[in-house]
Length: 74
Image 1: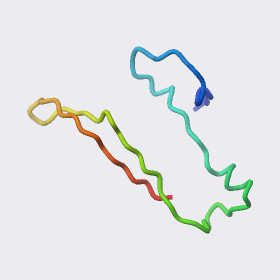
Image 2: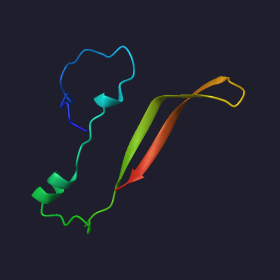
Image 3: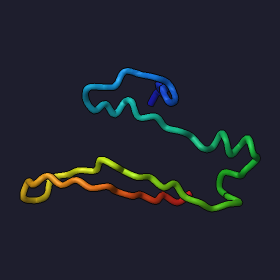
């Protein structure tokens, strides 16, 4: 996927969902600049994401909304 590099810039808000606007942030280049081997991490940690607008339809078709929390280990 080609990066649009819009992070941190003012952009027009899309009128509908567009998965092409998602951008990958590679960690390998930053780790390489600190001489951290790719398969041997000298640290541990996690990313903690809050999904403020999580919604879905139940099996009966009723809309449900919630706040979701994701923890992704490094």
